Length: 560
Image 1: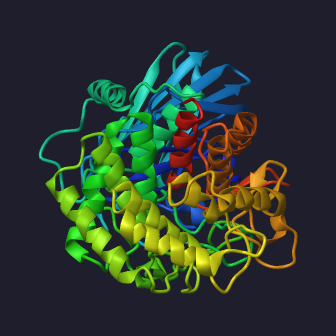
Image 2: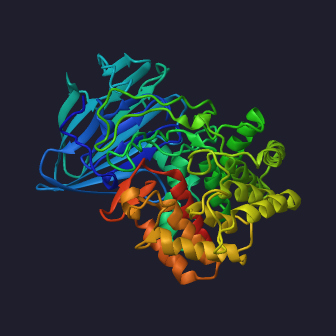
Image 3: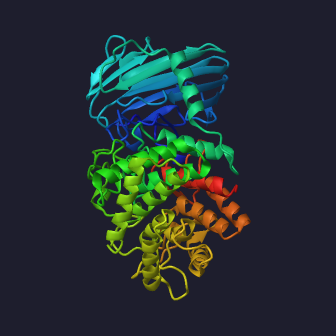
């Protein structure tokens, strides 16, 4: 079971290191408490985040105060501890870019002021803790279909994993390297200095220089999304599973997969920022799925384009307030709005002369699917029951308009106006649901209707009046409870308010919304899906890619 020396922390205190193929959640006590290997959606080898076995920690032996920061333009994290005897840093990274099937975890313990006295434990447990490796020789093991090798800890003692007390002399450093692979290596351990230099250089080449109203946060958002994007172009929605959106409410999901919608949001943000690698990745991945599955794509796929497994429970306690869950029922849904997102993505790529032949074929496939299926009920952006959701239809109209197919777009918009206009002049959620919804702001933002359309202005005004509180926005009203009791504020919606206000020419309001929502993070600058306004705590899986995408898009567009 979970090592009680490393209890779960509030989400704001976690950082993420990632290499595109997998990621590691890092806690304030220097604990690697979550990592799936060899890929995002495989079983975890460190599962203490959700109450399972498996931990890899470097922790000061003395009392300490914790801090940390990313090295600019990268996902290289530095834990920093001020102890009674000095200052210790631990530099953390996965070698970048990641190699499919093989992860290399780099840890450099630095005695910044005085000797660094740390306790180290390396206890990987493949299969969500089901397998306990039998390390031997130079700390190598073959367990659970994974091959492990740990170097830099020759004095470690075998027990509950491998443990040692390490002293790094003042001014010096000590490297630890853990390899996790689906096959034995063909050569000896990597040279730590060379691996660090290569990783630093690659991050430097990968992260573009961005000019926005918040350059550092925009670059960090880009780095987070790049860290979640694999060699095949697929960007997972999040690095984690089962982190609850609301304690004991049963809303725990597995987001270690690639959602077409989220991928398109990332591509649109990258296009707006003029940072084209993530745009190209998104076009490549989405095009392949549409060309393979035609008018019946799945809403989500694995990072390699495979099917998402159905939900199942693990025999683990879960993160406090939640429970363990892997797989996702989304694979059984039809989400019409994804066609519109794909069309918007392809149009943005074409505008920047980055749409290849496959992309053009995929765009024609998506447009034909919209024209054939736009009247069908679907699960919508929030993955609810199938209905005639207004956003889904208008999003498809926006995508058609972006590609110059104005005739079919006009037909969809005219029908939606006739059946989904509220008596007050704003949009309704659905034909049979008069309530408001944050997704309705996208109709004008994405161009289904003009910003000057009375429905655009009245929807924004009503939404801000009824579904926002203290500078944060909620998706929709669940019931008669106060908004913050039903669920957390939805950071995606907060950024949509900023974009909508900016589109209406209200720049001061747009800036206030942007600043409020980008601050809903911890020291690592990671954003989750939801935010508990009263408790000032992050909720849900971490980090949430589409929230970082909207932060980047807002930072870019508000600068214009």
